Image (tube, rainbow, N blue to C red):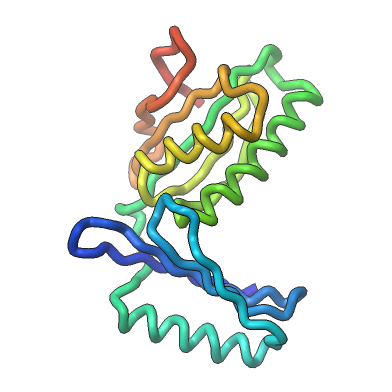
Length: 185
């Protein structure tokens, strides 16, 4: 699947995104765009084969460049971790179900708002961590809280921390249950 995501900042500071991909299975070329942090708009062209998709992707890239869109560098990206406290060190079947549920919900929620992508998850040390790379840490934290409040039953055990992608271990706690003051993976 060919895929591209680019961003631009308007004069007022608003960050916008555009992304495009070819869904080979559905024979669609999809363009998704909007303001980062808000539900995006999507248009699809149907009956697109691989050769036509290459041409559409090239035209998309050229138009984005002309309109001032470009990929973001690592210095503009943030590592966001949604962490759930668990009752056992290695987790239970219920915790693994929570992991699948959280990853699936966050993947869709962040992507359709141009905020970022879920990069993976891990269970260990009595914690479930879901890792994401995001473009706006404040909006990403708000989105993570909203998404996981609606999608999981363990919201009261959720902590969220952020760190610059260029300094991935410099986490700062942005949301936590009452009494939690620190964050570690």
